[in-house]
Amino acid sequence: MRAALRWCAYGLCLALVCACTRVCAAPAVIAPGAAVAFADAPHLDVLRVPLAQLEAALPAEPTLRLFEITDQPGLYVMHAPSLAAQGAMFSRVVALNERRDMPRDRVVTMNAVVMNAKRFGEDPAGLTAGNNFSTTQIAHFFNVASQQRVTLTEGEHLLRMLLARWGLIREEAGAWFAASAHDFLITVPATGTGPAGEVIDVAVRAAILSHELGHWRYFSDAAYAHACRTFWWHELSHTERAALTEELAGMGYDPSDRIVIDELQAYLLHTPARYMPLADLPGAGGVDIARVKRGLERSVQNAGQ
Image (tube, rainbow, N blue to C red; front, top):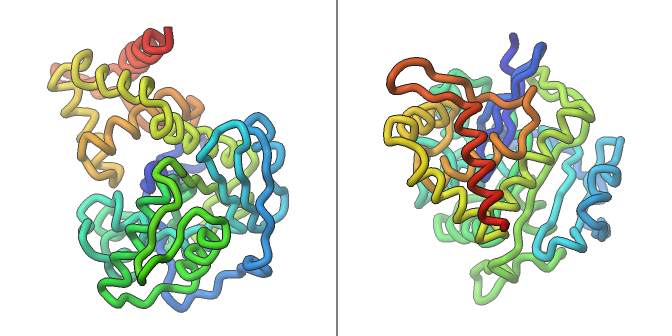
């Protein structure tokens, strides 16, 4: 089985496993001078669609598209023209905000991102298969980079320009701000094959989208998020929490509760079963994933009553 592709959730990975390919989790790694096609990106219009029509509206061709979700205020979706293009925009945003063993107070070099990926036995050419960030987090990245006088890559320049023209971030007195603390951006890649042989077909892209929308639910629905956190702290045992944290950390996630709870709900409740990477851990300190999933489902269902 070939380790092929990293999905991002909360900016990090969504490990996707199927019979022939594994979608694991690592930040996109693109050399600073890499050529990535963003033809006509500055002239893109934003397409406004309801959430139910989003999947059907995603283009079949490798092109950049921007979507505003009309019935989910604050939700915005970017369809990247390729895994490489998506990675060129988000690699260091991921590293700053969510990557395990990467600093939270400075933007690292692209070489540091590559070396960190290798520490986890990952192909440095592997890319995030999806991303999700509040626009506050993205603005924070640009501010930290500016304070350090870090030179942005071509992809990062494009991301900043797109979000500014989209009206999601704005510059004031040399600093970047989110237009609203409630705005949230998710990204999915075009179908095709990535630089390390990663295969994104329509089914995989749909699974990435579902997972990333799970993070939107956690971000935007306070009752849902509270139910997930309550389940984590009051329904799971200490040994179960420790085992699940260790499993997610082993996939490259930051082991903080903030990340682990969000990733757990996105995997268990929003990721198709064939792509779900969490596995049972036997023994006294182990975890029965099916039991955990049932318990989490009950918790969020009760919260909605």
